[in-house]
Length: 191
Ligand SMILES: [Zn+2]
Image (tube, rainbow, N blue to C red; front, side, top):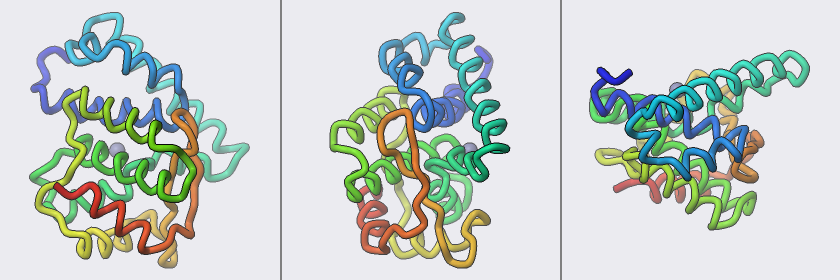
């Protein structure tokens, strides 16, 4: 991992932050408390980050068998991320960077729907920022991004399954988020 370019490390970190937000507040807090070790891939931090991310993914996938659809929470941040990647031609942002921006958007939707308070959004955005990931998308427009979410393969019959946070460490899925809320959150993540 030490030989990876900084930007490639950043892309992994985007998904790692995601695991904290969707499933494990203690893991999120670990990332908040050790940003320098995380960025430097200090051995203990790197081992914990990777192990915990794999454990969470495995737990979500295995619980999915009991709670059908739970694995959808792994898509947190990805609905807007895919729209951003598409609009910017898959060159401006790598996947983890687009996910980082998409998570900021999803947190903002969560706040607008009063699922979380401003403090939770600030925590998420601050961690993303602290780990050197983007929180705003350049080269995107609300109209193209909005149209883009309906091209996502996870969008079924025009219903977007938004994975939203109801606290740091837990998510819920909503498919009835009003268009104006989505558009306002998209406008919020445009640089
Ligand atoms: Zn991803």
